[in-house]
Image (cartoon, rainbow, N blue to C red; front, side, top):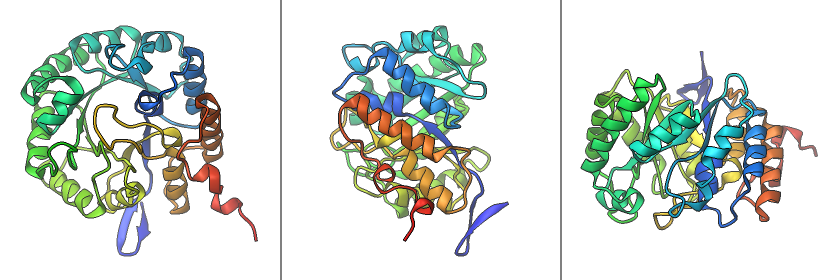
Length: 310
């Protein structure tokens, strides 16, 4: 079954991976205590989320917000049915993630040489060799391995990212053992037409491979891009509670897609997420208190449509 939208049949259900505890917090000047990170993750797990990106096993001097990721994993109150994942940039990070008990390990690298050097200090070919080693380690441990391809819709240093380049790298990632591929709009350069061009090209090249999108709202097109992807049957997305976060190694990268804003839109469209929207909103408000500033979320400001009267 699917949800009708004009002449387009949309997915009946969407799966959301929450990235706020990692991709959200890594771009904040306020570094949360381990105890507050655990409070945040526990609150997110109680909303019905099935996947939560807990942290990153990176050098503390590069991303101090993630310095306590090992301690966070060690103290998690794991909820049944929730996968707690981690980002790892290299073999050492992958081993640390597995030792810490990550349910899934994600490697990230870029479709452009400039952003890859800025983000992980390697060439794209070096990153691919790194992916091969990481994949072998993670798969030997019987854990899922997810490859996240950054700047797939445009690079802040190089501009347009050729679609054929994206497809070539996706093919190589799948050949290296990635079970899932996520395409990232790292600095919010995507627009609905481009999203559909990239998704359609991916579906033609890899017709049996599921696709996840990690879209940003840096220029306000985030939810429009979600709709464009839904129209082509994409049903797996990343988002961040409160809309916080972004990449600290690229200019113009704030504006993660907001979990409660996307959930509200999907629910209004009749698409199931399995998420408790009021609980997400309460979590976003709690996060505001922890950070000491407002978060970009529009839903916690405007409220849920069906609750409004008059």
